Amino acid sequence: MNDQVFVSIIMAAYNAEQTIKQSINSVLSQSYADFELIVVNDCSSDKTREIVVDYTKKDNRVRLINNKKNSGVSISRHNGLINSKGAWIAVLDSDDLWAPDKLKKQIDFVVQTSAKLVFTGSTYISNDGTSINWIFHVPTQISYKSLLKQNFISNSSVLVEKSLYSDFESIGDQMHEDFACWLKILRSGIMAYGIDEPLLVYRIAKKSKSGNKKKSAIMAWRTYRYIGLGLFQSFYYLMCYGITGIIKYYHINKNINN
Image 1 (cartoon, rainbow, N blue to C red):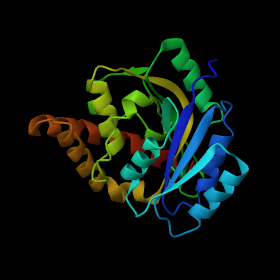
Image 2 (spheres, rainbow, N blue to C red):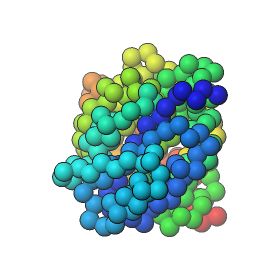
Image 3 (cartoon, rainbow, N blue to C red):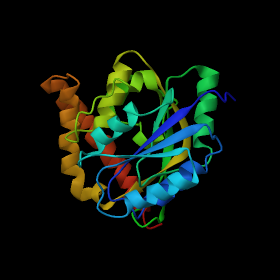
Image 4 (cartoon, rainbow, N blue to C red):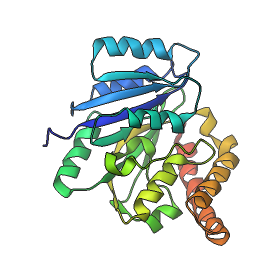
C-alpha cells in the first residue's frame, strides 16, 4: 500500500439534503484515509450547506466551496478541481455511495499496475434507498473505440490521475460531460481499467428513469458531436449507446421490486 497517494474527492451538490449525509458518510468510512473531500455547494436553497458545514467542523478532511451563483454540475466539478490538492481525483455524486474499501482497492490497483484511470462495477438503489438486486459488471479494461459504443465508466466510480483530469473543461450540462471527458482521455491512447466489483452504489433518481430517455439520447448525440465525430459516426454510436442503455435499464427495472 502506498500512503503517499493523496486523493481529492469532488462532490457537486444542489438541494441534496435528503441524501448528502449518506454520501459523505460513505466517504468518511473509507478504509483508505489519505484524502480530502471537496463539496461544492451550487447555491442550494435547502439545508445542504448547513449539513456540510457541520461535517467540516467534525473532520478537517471535508472542505466546502460555495458557488457564487447556480452554475450546474459541470462548472461545480471544475471549481472543485481547481481547488483540489491531490495528485488523484475521484468524483462522487451527492446521492451516490461507496463501498468501504472502494478507494483502497483502486489505490492498490494503481500502485500495482501504474494505471492512470480506474473505474468499478456498480450496484443500485432506488430513490428511497431500497436495494435493487442487480449488479452492473464492467470489463477489466476498455479502449476509446469500445467506450464509444457503451459508457461502462460510471462517473462516481472513477479514480483518475489529476494530470489527465485537469484538462477537463466546464463544458456545461447540455451533454454527458463526464462521458466526453473519458472519451477525450482514452482517445489520447490511455487505457481505462475496470475493477469488476460493485464498489459504487448508484441511486436511480426519478429524473433518471424512463421519462428522461429522450433527453439522455440528445445529450449523447451532443457528446459525440462535441468530441468531433461526423454525422454518420455519431448516429452509429448513438444507436449502440441506445441499445446498451435499454438493456441496462431493462435489468434495473426488472429487479427494482425484487
